[in-house]
Image (cartoon, rainbow, N blue to C red):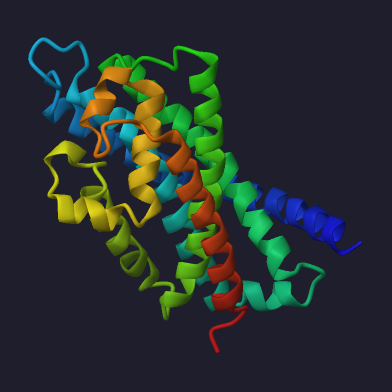
Length: 265
């Protein structure tokens, strides 16, 4: 009886979270528009062929990889900051007196991020396709890869955002605390900079975190297989990508359960 109740209350909490997001029009605009704006800027600056004579441009590479940043921004940063606010204004303390458990609360946040991430990805694809001729997945296998990448990325980033929310002492400090690791990982994981140009030591460190694998996975969905040679291992490594992201889902859940606090004290 416990598990169904957790799922039911988590789903109900997710519905409330989605409604709250929809009512915050300024938050919606910033959350969705910022990754798209960065994609446009990077794409316009580096709109050159990946190699001489190639039909694939750096803009398309950035557009594919920026989906990882869009999910990370929506899940990790937005959720982490939102929980810090909920903790500070007493929302979490009030929820603790209801049937909602920590697990239900986590499920509610994951539902919220899935809702937001779908719109984020659609917007980034719209930018990529219309402005930079990013090709959509050319086979059922690639669409399937896109599906499991979205699921694992959203779950991992959301749970890590929940855990990271405990690092911020106040809601004011939360954006700075959460944006710093995200910004660093965008450069070291090959999202803002082509991964082929990064030092090997930097790549080895970034390979320990999910962002590098998210970016590589989304590039494998939208870019020609010939470009896999420019990845670190010379291939897309879908199996390893799934294993790493799956492991971070488990790590994120453990960290969330260990670090989550209903109040600041």
